[in-house]
Length: 389
Ligand code: ADP
Image 1 (cartoon, rainbow, N blue to C red):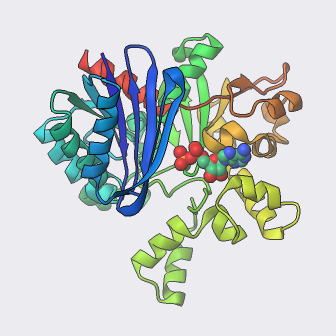
Image 2: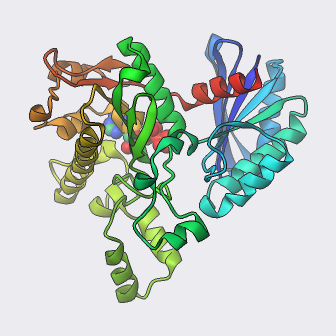
């Protein structure tokens, strides 16, 4: 069975093609909506890469280009796995897409106005272009369906949950799910015995507490803006401070949203960059870059520590995504002074594990620490294949 995985965003489409066993092709079309959009892909078996600039003004054209690439290699597509950010309370499992499913994804648009509309566009156009293929939706929120209600419901009047479904949903579910399965495999232990904390630290960042194969808490909430400090997102802030700010600066809800999602986090504090690499390179010279670094790491530490309590113990902490996979400096800062909780890092292993999988905990660390490259595309392909079977 051949599977195309599509991650269709507002201005980019990421894609990957898998045959029965392997990823054969992957790529990205960026800056959709512009005359200088970029197409990049790599045919993995012979490392054949192509990159060019082209005017791509809409998703229809972008997916036509993808269809040409698929044709060039003479691929047959049986299934398309679509990443869908928000499934609300309706979708707690991946589903084969039909008209009703599209309607229901549409209903979730108010919950993810920046994502779900583009996923739907991707689904519609795929159904036209790749008319032979079956389409499966895999939801970022679905893995967190097991979070208990006392964790998910916010302590505001309950009627707002009933009226507007305001509650914690959690995101990055496909990544946390992949990391959970991979960790069990690496540790060679059954999931039913494992307590894990998975840290997905990319541009967006979230941490999940996993008990015996189920997500029991996660740092993102009703939106992917909650929890950790991120590249440009604030994460948790006293909600009343924002109401105060709104009054003082006479801001609209849209202004506040912009500040919280685009002007905050590493960028907001340092006023220099949202990229952790730059923050690290500047932190010894620039006071605010230094503060941004310490704030970021402290927040990861705080979530890890609280989840050790939630789980009543822990077998393994997993670091993943851009920052987690590549930054020993962040991992060291996050996990320093946690020896009383049973966490000890092997400095040499930590600094030699960059962009690859491996344990970085010391031999005598009670809790293991593992670095894993996440693979959401592979996970979506696997899930889509299973559901079709
Ligand atoms: P996304 O969340 O968009 O999928 P990634 O998981 O690829 O992104 O993470 C991207 C982020 O990873 C970059 O913004 C950068 O801050 C961080 N990153 C990548 N490499 C390093 C590195 N060597 N050291 C620190 N941070 C890194």
